[in-house]
Image (cartoon, rainbow, N blue to C red; front, side, top):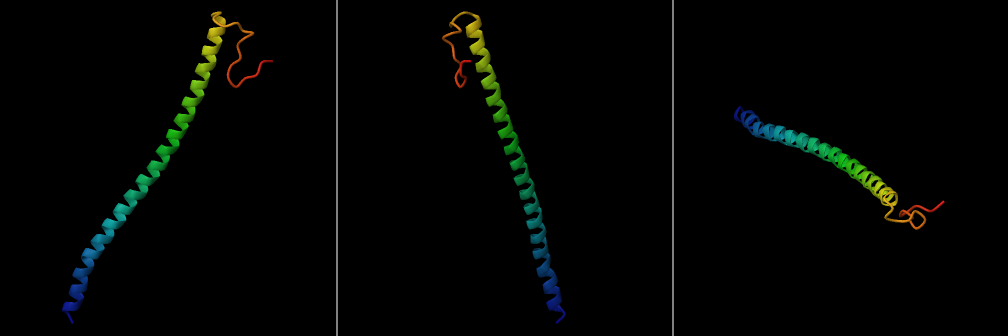
Length: 84
């Protein structure tokens, strides 16, 4: 009977170590998942900002074309905008 508790103690040591490793890996996984979501959010925000800047760039190029006299302002209608 004395050997049985020793076995359970020695048997529980690898289980405990495995449990600790599992918890450590699980914690690392959750942190990485959280970081992934945060990076995904930042990426979407950056992509939205790029779209805004591209639209501003196109609007400025449209204005430049008109100001340079390359297109008659009466013929010019920017995409998505209606003439007044």
